[in-house]
Image (cartoon, rainbow, N blue to C red; front, side, top):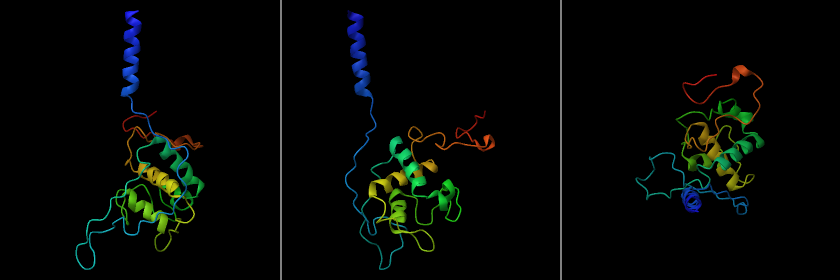
Length: 174
């Protein structure tokens, strides 16, 4: 009886100590949030220093569900058609550390929403904001900017050529 009671207490303590991942199955309706100048691209401003700008955080950051949804949406909206699964094609590669317009989540969000000159179309009126944030989470996971516990270790697509398989854990090969 004593062992069963202590097992129940340990189980309850273990369950309350675990932090569960929050999943928003039914996100709020899509709002076309265009943040103006919320994403700073440079500290250089005409007319001198400006008051501090608001910090925009990705509400879907570090969530494995949202990163996998971002991966699905990345392919569904044919982002891979220009960015070639992150390696670059017609569009610039997304697997890099230095970004032209900034690699922070707000900068990537701005790039998707507003587009960029000479190539990147504006997706602001076509993709809901929550899906754009999920794509941002996936794009940042390509660079290792997301926690490894939330990032998948392999792509969800079928690899047809075994020579293309790459293990993301350094030092281990099979």
